[in-house]
Length: 336
Image (cartoon, rainbow, N blue to C red; front, side, top):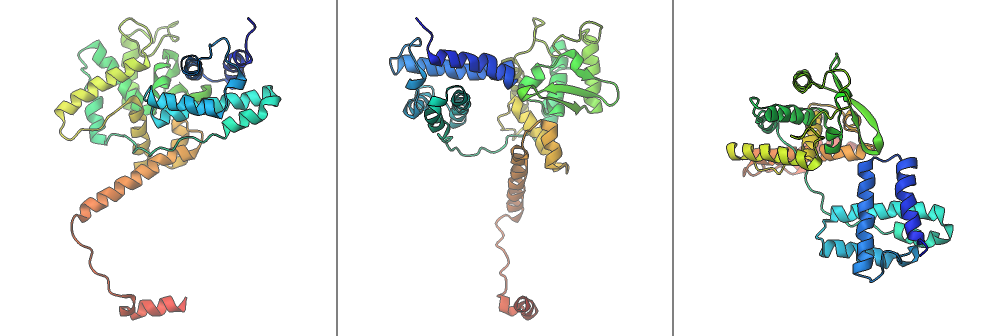
């Protein structure tokens, strides 16, 4: 059986275009691949089209809409996840229209499909007191506790994404003044971020304890699991969750749901509250557009508004006199 046009273009899109021309990370390419896996299964199970026979011509706007509805209803995907899936299909058909111009109209109709609207959730972040509770919870008397203390400090101090943190190798850390760490972000973009003195000291002890400061060991993962392999994203989530839940049981009022990405939000909020400009925060966190960074400004404004309302309490505002009662002000306004 001859390969379908869909199989050819999906293969080239994943292996040549994304990896070669776009230089996307393996983790991002895997996320793209998963979307096509779901799409092929949908065509087979819901539309009765075998994987070997599904073609580009079969995938139109109605097909994509039905696919998204299937993800929402049968797999209970959130609107954010649906939009991520649709964005992958947008990117694929943008690629296809340049490879198969005769399908340009079909591609552009799919590319014109709007993302689904969703309510913007508030930014989840920790106050400085809450952060201190989390960072100091790991037990320094155990090797795992010492590793977790260093890992959580680096996660906050660098504002790293979860994948950026677990991808770190020993040679990505430089502890000579000024101490810094090299992160590889989305699109394999490299950025270097400074380390605070306390975090640098923790990292120095961590490297020494795990023999990661010896020659020839710089390629090893900076944070390892019990088997000596690289810590996974699920492993990082589990470790953070275990410490947060322990703190939650000890500290009244600690109710936030915290994920590794919440630590990144926490760093962004603390930088903003310290007076750092949005442009510098953008570069520090590796955002492409400052519009992404503005979520912290909006969250900080909302936090300020709630604080002011709390201070005001139930006290009714003092009644203001009519404009006419203030003759000097009225005269000034009329003179404008």
